Image (cartoon, rainbow, N blue to C red; front, side):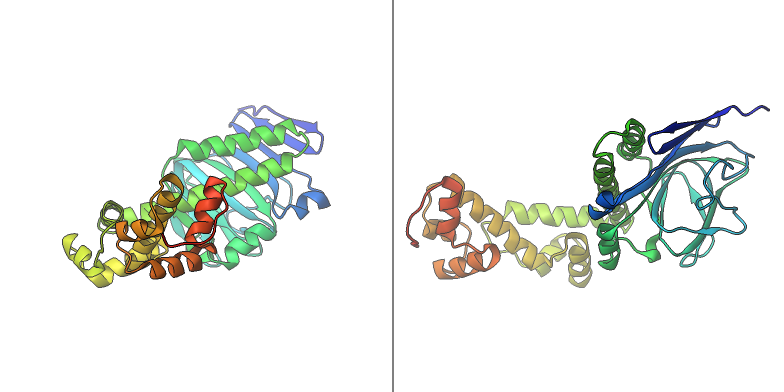
Length: 320
């Protein structure tokens, strides 16, 4: 079979097309782009048919590899599989099967290899990037070599973001790198959110239990809630509830409830004419002084200062 292919040179971008449905760009970045904190080096899509050679042989040497030898990249990459299945292995992860709806996170300086099954082929979207912003995300544990395969399912919104990145690279307009950097951060945020929620959904309805607890807290923000009683009401152990709730929200149940009270207090301060004492009574704070101290510690403003800023006023502090 004759494979038709053409390459177009376009202001620093190389665009490749072939009948397999491949569309990929390798971008040139300058010092100004790198100062932004995140820059994109490559973005692409490949539809690999069953039995075809992988990867296609029209990639630059620093990106090309064979499944047997693998490779080491100088950048991070997100590789999203939307059709078919295959395998993946890296220095941090043993050989495992990969299927549609999964996404690979590749790290610079780490050996890895992946390939579609010769029986099914696969479709992949990918974007390669580097910079201090991503390094910081890795240092803080948002991206981890221990979790390089993320289950996110088939999401049209993610495909749309990859496609938009391809369009921006092709257009090659001023500020393209910054636009691509924003898309990359959007992708990372969406991927982390989706994978985390799918993880909790698979933990014996953990997500449903925590969401139920959040709703109960929100609907009873003007009362006091005991976390142990709430766990019993939901039919789960308190130790499990407290552990999973903090992992899910970033707060212990008690602190999350206090944050809800604080949010409601902010709303009442700006949107009503209730006095600070009335707000304290409404939200079941022990005293106006306690409310004042807690509010100032969490927001940096006294209740009256917060109300005045919200309403464009300036008055002296009072509990009345």
